[in-house]
Image (tube, rainbow, N blue to C red; front, side):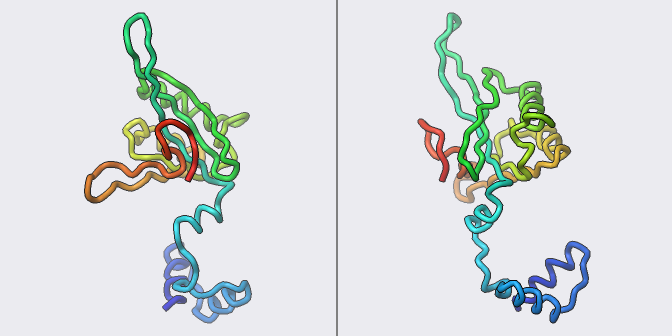
Length: 170
């Protein structure tokens, strides 16, 4: 059964390989068949630490001469180093602001996501389809957290939205 899953995975990406070839390669590298391999999300993240970042927003209430304003601050956290980078802050996180965030993150020189291939973010509308397309065009795959089934509220981004008062990681 385990070899069938490996065979199917290779077939899905256009490769035709025999069962005995897969078995020989897995054995040579000390890997058990699929059902016996650890496949948890945590195992996946640890295997790809250096290529994954998480992004989210936090809010800050600011008193101004016009009254209380809410500022939205976007930040990115590198899973491997746990370093946090504040990208920008605005009271109006519109499409223009998110375009600038994308440019800042993916700039060829100094862009914080240049060495990353995956960005984990929640399903907030600020991460719109055009924003995700721009990130994809820069070679960054956006993985959005799933919805909770019972409440239909988005799952918090486990790598970013760990607490309300501090920026930390699970």
